Image (cartoon, rainbow, N blue to C red):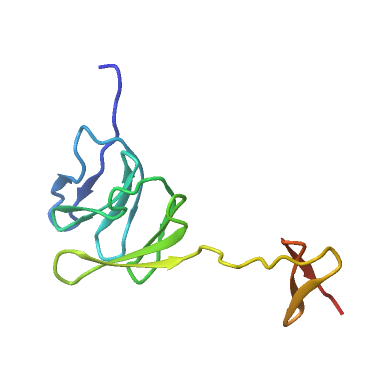
Length: 142
C-alpha cells in the first residue's frame, strides 16, 4: 500500500459499537464533533457533515474552505475565499441542515475629486475619506 487515507470512526458509549463515518477513498484532513453527535469534517476539498448515517455536503461544491469551527449551539461556521462570506449550518431535528450566510464583501463607490478636494464622513472616532479616487482610513485619537 503506497498511501493511507485517515478515516473517522464513531464508538457508541453504551454498546461500544464502532461505525465508520467516512469511506476509504476519502482523504479526511480535519474533523470536529458537534455536542449533539453530528460530525463536521473537511475532506477532498469540501466541508461535510455526518448526520444519522447520512453525509451532507455543506460547502455545496464551492470548495476552498479556509476555516471551519463549531459552537455550543451545534452550528458549523466556515469561510470560503471564493465566496467572500461566512457560512453557517445547523442540523435540523429531522435529517438535513439549515444554512445561512453573512456577506463580507466591502462595497463602496469612489467619486473622482481633484487632488485637494475630499469627501469625509465622521463615524465615532474614525474619519472615512475618499481622496483623488483612492480610499483612505485615518484614525483620530483625542
